[in-house]
Image (cartoon, rainbow, N blue to C red; front, side, top):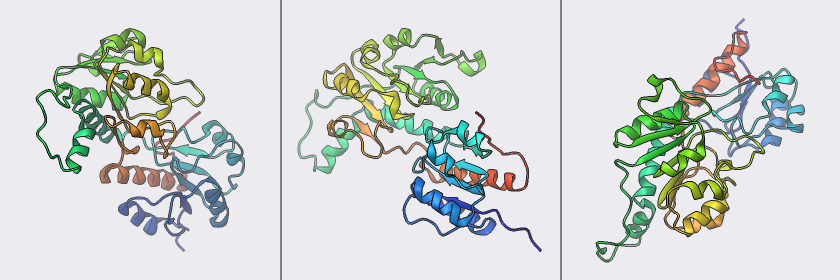
Length: 324
């Protein structure tokens, strides 16, 4: 007799190709009508006697929730790179393995970052609003002027895979690239970028600053009023990493005062309900946490998660394990 297919549950609908593979290769309940929260997933795991839980940020597993995971669950597979929503040490201590989806998001996150840079510098949000309202009159020669991107100095905070991919794209715009990282890259990886061990020393040189680092739970924001003050007047902030990295009150003050020319944001402190004061500023170019939101990337993320479930079910090592 054929062995039973691995039993899994997922907190959210996945791309069509991933759902087709789940239907073919796994035992799973129907696709959820809406993203399931933690309580619903825990109840479903018990009901289905799930071997694996596929989750996203919709389903945080921390504290008492980890203790409530049924003993049948052997793997928590997050369909993301970020682990902010998981208490990894607690999961591992319970004997539940953890995996994520690194590498496959790099290009799409870097592409989105370049979109945010271009849109913030060229005031795309205002131009789009003007056109949707019917345009109606020719602009003056000095009206609604943006900032040229080509030839500017870009500061990158966090020079991992995504940061390096952004740097490669920036060079196509003849941008000078500076970076701050926990460690200096080797020369081949730097590709001419200039390393700053101290972030405060880098900031005064940046026309555009983009963030590409994880957020530590409970840590204070990286970008505070002091840090914004170190940027040159008329600079641009881009954040496609984590909302917790930015003090949004300080960001608003810097934008309102004109110290910052503009911002491009994909992430926020309070998602999915960002600060209304940020939403009210007409210049900011905003997207709803969509760095990985392409068919290619989201499909690759889902497939990698399923690869991990299949590996563990076959008593093989995880493809992308997360360790404490």
